[in-house]
Length: 127
Image 1 (tube, rainbow, N blue to C red):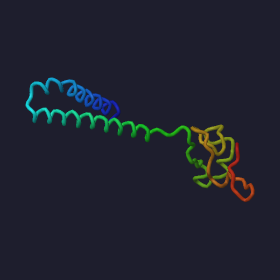
Image 2: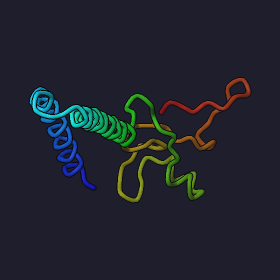
Image 3: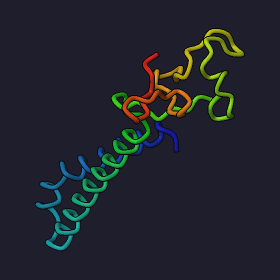
Image 4: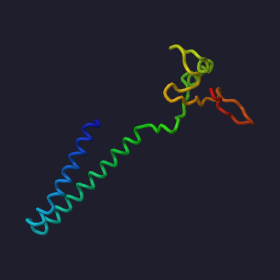
């Protein structure tokens, strides 16, 4: 289901819940006791459902968007295919490139061919 349909359904559900809430005084004064209770249950369930679906929609949006603060683990295509000389060169098949870095977020390639040893530990070079 696309975003517009989901958003429309959420708005409709909230509108139904709010309308039912506004009508509580009318139902309370014109209906017998059992219908009053049924109406209150309907209102509570509708509003709880709308709230739960809104929360789910917000979580889906949060999960679907990458966190801009964290850089993903990147492996260059050259390293992935064992062409380590290609990943470290300044030009590629499509022209100039940044060696060993993601073209979208500038994350460094995590392949050990880019690593330098400092005190026995691998350290990725700053390019």
